[in-house]
Amino acid sequence: MIEPASIISDFWNDQLVEHDRQWLFLVLLGIVLSFGFIRLSTRLMRSPRVPWWPGSVVSEGGLHVHHHVFGIILMISAGTISFAGFAVNPIYEFCAFLFGIGIGLTIDEFALWLYLDDVYWSKEGRSSIDAAVVCVLLLGLVLLGTRPFELSDGSVGAVLLSIITVLTTVFAVSICFMKVRFWHGAIGFFLFPLALYGACRLGKPASPWARRFYGERNPDKQGRSERRFPPDRRTERVKNRLRDVLGGSPEDEYLAKMAARSEQDKGG
Image (cartoon, rainbow, N blue to C red; front, side, top):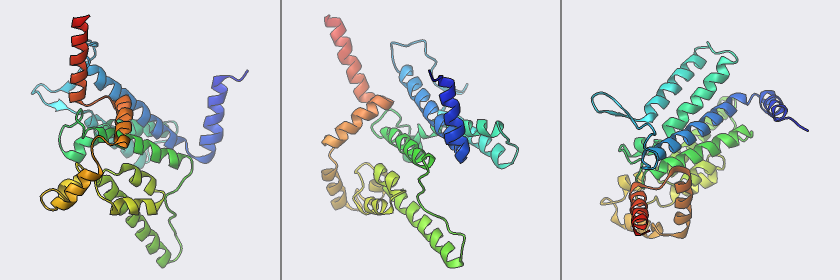
């Protein structure tokens, strides 16, 4: 009978340490655990069934301290220790895990720093869940050895070509994210034609790109975007179900469910 400890030890030594991927694995593990914990915590906070669960961190002056603040502090601390050269095993591995925790706490509020508004439990807040899934997917691909591009250290021309390739890829992927075409951007980071395709296509009607370049500036494109991405289309319904499972439903839907459940309890 194979012991679980032996399986974990073999995986750590043969699959991770052997290929110098243990630090990236710890970053990924930190992201998954911290994102999962903070999403569970925020869902328990708003649930009337769990009144004993601690609430948000609020200062004496009434300021709500968002958890991405703690994530940023963790990333700064872990990164500084690593870059300063103070970290040696196992401290370096601990820093990698802390850095992952910081990313998880920060990316859970991706919508806050994208929309510059507290939209955590709104429909726009679902972009935080999309961003977390994309982040985990990208790190998972890198952990498996996939590289989005090769950086040349040969001739000056080859180096310049590498830099242009990197900048072009990042530019196209950034436009995809601004248009809320997350999957085009995530997969396109490793398959550039897909990122270029997503960057050239219409942005979603509520995306930062649409707010900047559509709307009153270009009502024709805004109308095309709304017709192309109706809120009730089948793919969006499937995505929303998955988002609800991972991160909880938006506030208006949650309150409607709670009201309906309360009516049922009264009737019963």
